[in-house]
Amino acid sequence: MNENSGSGKIAVIGDKDCVLAFQAVGAEVFAETDPYKVRDVLKKLAREGYSVILIAEEQAAEAHDLIKRFSEDAYPVILPIPGGSGAAGSGLAALRENMIRAIGADLL
Image (cartoon, rainbow, N blue to C red; front, side, top):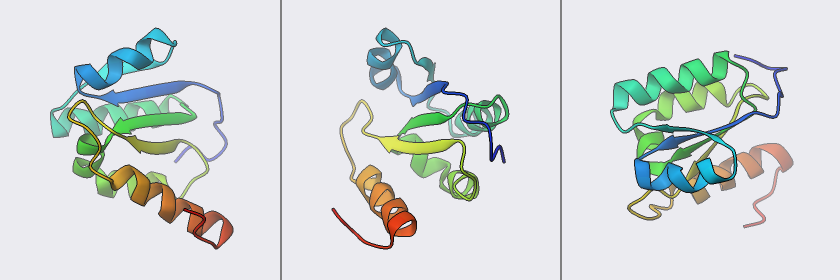
């Protein structure tokens, strides 16, 4: 979508508990759990040129097809993170998949 938009901007999408810590370090945060709103925010952030979008695993699962479509471009890099309810393991699975695609080996 935005292949050359490595602006350095970072955003975080997830439940309120998940995003508050990131706000303290200067990331733009979007406390959103509604699946439709999460998808809208994700599209908006990609259009606005964010380089990195961290998204809570639960919300990432709800927008999996959209995230997969964005992963075809260099930016934004979308990384699942544990949400307020803890880690579900999909973040590590996504990291493993991207690593294999990037370097051809599973180092994890």
